[in-house]
Image 1: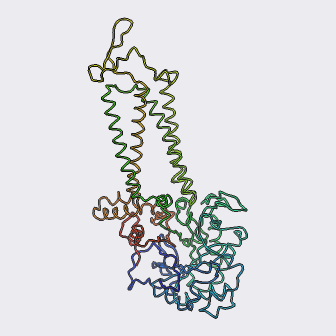
Image 2 (image 1 turned 90 degrees about the vertical axis):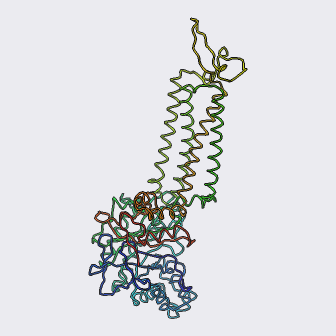
Image 3 (image 1 turned 60 degrees about the vertical axis):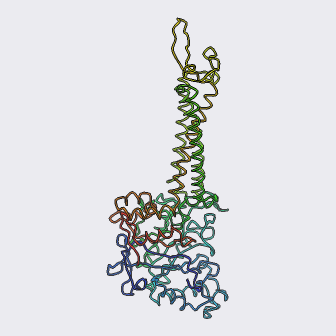
Amino acid sequence: MVSSIKVLWCCLLLSLLPCRVANGHAPLVPSERFPLRVEGRFIVDRLGERVKWACVNWYGPESISFTFGGMEKLPVDEIVKRIAELGFNCVRVAYSLEAHVRNPFLEEQFVKANRFLSGKRFLDGFDAGIEALTKAGLMVIIDQHVSRAGYCCHWSQDEGLWYVPGYPEDIWIQSLVNMTRRYRGNSFVVGIDLRNEVHDLHSNPKWGNGLMMTWGDNDPKTDWAAAATRAGNRVLAENQDLIIVVMALCFGMELRPMRSHPIKLDLPNRVVYETHNYVEYQFWNLIPRDLGITFSTLRTITMLSCLALSATIFYLLRRWRRSGTGYPPKHLFLMSLGAWSALFSLIFMAMAFTTYKAACTYCKWGAQEDFLPWVYFWLLAALGGLALLVVSWRLSGMASLAELLQVDRNLLQSDESCDEETDLFRKSSGEGSGREITRPWDRGLVINLQCFMVSVILLLVCMVALLAAIFIDTYWFYERLEKTCHQNHRVVAHCLWWSHARWLDKQWGFALEEGQAFTAPIWMGEFGYLNHGSFWLQFMRRWLNGQVHSRYSLASFG
């Protein structure tokens, strides 16, 4: 990338058919083809032909500089020329409410290469950037990024909602309307991105904690769909030719509530949904990163643990068999099973709850859908284990643990041998009859039984952890999964069930399914990962290029 422009993210539209263009350049849309409309999962021009948004983000007006990045290095026309040369046909330009409301003067240090802006204000610099872009034939999507000028976005910030102290909803909507009115005569300004990366509010001195973003419940404080509908209708009332871009929940990664509550504006065929996708949005990849343990190390630890536990179980079984002891009493076995099931279920419930709380940091709505059910499952399992313990205890007729473990010494032989001939003995009844039984279950054998059961449970846990360390390891798994899918088309459906593609389909790709009430174009406004050689990025690129076939027949880009 050129040093004059900090290209933070790539913006790409997923809902288009393959469009191979010479030199990899996306085609520019002639002015006579505007305005754009939505048709199913596609964006189309005035003639009904599909249009691809191949965009780049041009940062700056939302920051404390209040102007486009690179204006201190190159003239604005030079920057725009480089954008066009790189093959983009549209630009997402961000701004803050603070910049729009205050309209501050531009500092000279930020516009040194564009002297005509010295002493000018924010709107003058914003006008200059948009004028240069549209003059070059580039489409523009205006992004209302943040309220207060500065960096965005982190879960600890209170910029997740569409309103903050000092900038209530009416100022937000009025800003969108004013921006719409300002560029209404420029047909290349094709869309308004209502708000960037909406997310839950965790803390705020004025509002307190715990405001969770919702969708479709009509809560005026949290319902993003309702707020987007209000804002979208006001924008369209000012300019009916615009596309309204609505961000997905949870930093742009969660669109599932739209399936049951799609946004319906006063004017139809205007809504495009926006998603953001980074590797850290895959929750399971946060675990090795935050805990400082790699999946490779986890595989080694769990594999060695499986071997150690298997050896322990083998030793306990061999010792049990050599002792000549029969099967444990049914009530003792059931009581042990219930006790350990309850204990381990409580441990797993605590782990599930910890995972749920961690997921809530990024997306409470998604955490409630994906992780909270596991908390309830292990709670029910714990209650089931306790019930089994109590019932088996009551059925055993024992009054106390001491009674359960007491040993009738008249039944014990002198400890001379443990072979088959001396292990059996007779218990005489009052009538002189008797029956053969094996050595009684004393305290030592009960302890061995508990060790055996714990070892079996831990072995199962380690085996599950080993499989998880293998299959959740994103870069290892997806690369090999895709090769398997290509080598054997019969297992494609099975591969997609587990693959990253299915994860994307579940989160937001479902919207591309034709003929549904929720069908709409999906615009992936941001994506990325620091390591450009990662399997995740390679898989994302292949998926976007249509090399992994899904039931939605996702199209490729040029």
